[in-house]
Length: 146
Image (cartoon, one colour):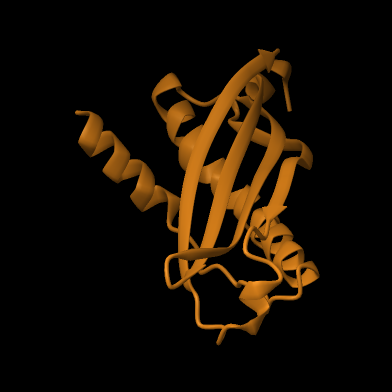
């Protein structure tokens, strides 16, 4: 393949996937362990990205999970799952979609596993987050902005 073809051929390369930040709080322990464990679970997502250099980007998917029983916080956990990606050859209008939808889809299983493991280490049953449709989230966000 010639150098010109390589430059025009869209490519996304995963350079690194890592946990940037990880936290767990169990503010009502140990009293909360005496309660019947049927929590309400809420999940919040946030996606940020930054340009590093040479078509290399860092994308951070923040997943915050809060469990409550009778308006008391059982646990609050937050994972900032990050990745460094080299993205070349895509038109500018596709780049935002890649950073806001495609890459978070790559990062989400890692964040889901980290949350499940962390909650289990606090002696709670694992939280298995349902798959997320980041394409739909991206489209909804774009519709709201416009």
